[in-house]
Length: 284
Image 1 (cartoon, one colour):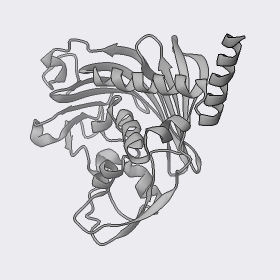
Image 2 (tube, helix red, strand yellow):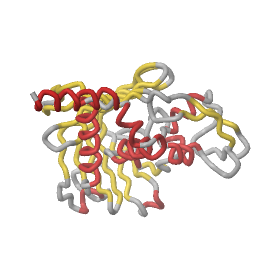
Image 3 (cartoon, rainbow, N blue to C red):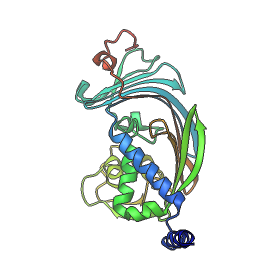
Image 4 (cartoon, rainbow, N blue to C red):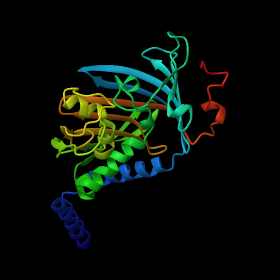
């Protein structure tokens, strides 16, 4: 009898607190994911991307090799056109990305990773390759709205198989999602604003009718800034290594971005030659 009474009391406490067992499970998996991301020093991964650009879903796919210290990225593009390669090594090539277009103009092109030419048609820059950005988004939500806000708006939705990985499905609903006016009083670009508010530059540009470019100085303007990366985010977290194999983001218009991760290699021992234009296996 005492055991039954104790269970009833625990149940009442959980109901009154609003923190259900499903929320506890979801919160635990999100925290484990953040911890797993912190342990990544290098990453090999194939990413399939569906992003809403100018009202249409654009599909992309690429194979990535990434190290974080130093920061280096090699990308082999599969979609939309196979064969293009991008190499970025922080501090080299005047801090520009080297691009083998696999076509015209038949020579390597050097571009600013944050400039208009490389950013057009993408939500994220090459600096957001991998998992670090989404980890920073979650940590920012906890810091800005409190840990309890994150807990209260998470739900565990069971398991699902994604690309052969058994995944825990965790959904976050940003109930305070919306837009606020921001007066820009100093020299700032849209990239600066995205880092300040942990949102994508593309979303800021879309909300403000694409009235400026990525490298424009926005001092003196008043912009509408989203209060979060997305209105709803669904994480598919692989039980094997507690990292997402899929992240789906929705905003006030519907699907914003869908990212599927496969062929995941955590902390592989990449050689320096794998981040060099002199690599004979590359087309630079």
